[in-house]
Length: 193
Image: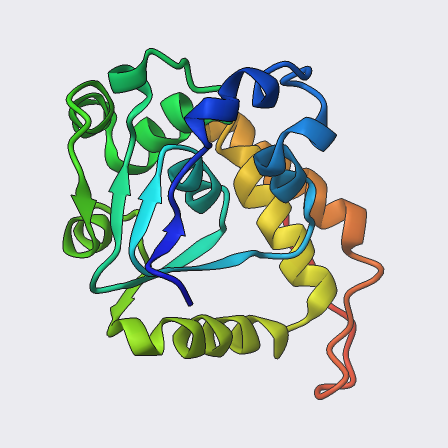
């Protein structure tokens, strides 16, 4: 409920922050978020700067307040990104926009974030948390096992070309087909391949 979502890493302590192994999830909050099997709904009001931007990108869905500004200052301070921003941002908003955002340290407003597919919703700052909870509750009303599986197939599929991503979807169907039931119809699913 402060003025910023996350103002980034304290640059006076940056050397200590970056001493750890970048592949160690304990030293990398984004890696910890990526290990979460359930969807993460982010609520951003104010600034999400550099490390804060990377944390916002690790969310599965994002609600932005009108004051939200996403800013990558890696290039300004000569610190190389290590939590995925250089790869995730270009996949979300396209490589040309990502280059301008990162190389020119161009702020991304809430309106730009929504238009470019970075934010799912824009609301008044006072409504950010309630909208994020509303989205999370909508997800929570669904089949929990399928939600977890669906998130994983989307995320894993993003690492593949379309042909292999579609094959992955079929593999995942077979992994769970015996565990999915439709109690309201009193039927077992029929999978057509």
